[in-house]
Picture 1 (cartoon, helix red, strand yellow):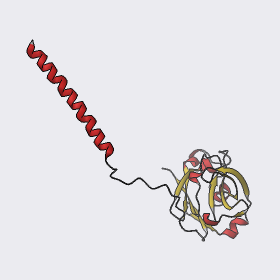
Picture 2 (cartoon, helix red, strand yellow; picture 1 turned 135 degrees about the vertical axis):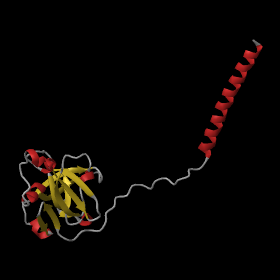
Picture 3 (tube, helix red, strand yellow; picture 1 turned 90 degrees about the horizontal axis):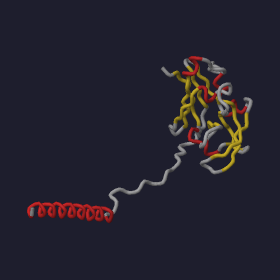
Picture 4 (tube, helix red, strand yellow; picture 1 turned 45 degrees about the horizontal axis):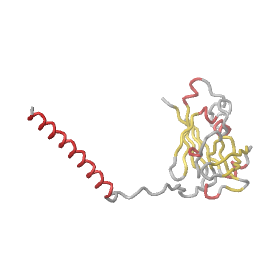
Length: 187
């Protein structure tokens, strides 16, 4: 019996020593300076302001629109709250569906048409994807425009064209300095 008590005490002491060593090691780690620098604050990459035409493609069809050609088309104005700018803004531009219809993209998609999607790209290489249903007023309540003015003024640092959509909680899929929109088919 005395041997069993001794083993029990040794086991208890070993466990207490292990716990104490763990606390000491955690305290030592907490006091060490971090080995990596903290991440820098997020910056919005603006890239260069695009001054060329906007290129739209679908299958083997392609059109290029200059700022003057886009301004001559029927415009729609949308008013929304820009979560990034923390301000109400008014954008004016051409419905994206109208521009896509010039390429033969269905205005009222049905069946296999819903495999269509578009990739919009800015001059800085920033790309976003929309399904055809998201940009078609016949299917979606949101409005997607290629804007050429904000608050009745040119877009300025945002380039000649900006893709803007209503119905989104934040403007993550808006594209400044818009240079191209490609309509593709999912396989």
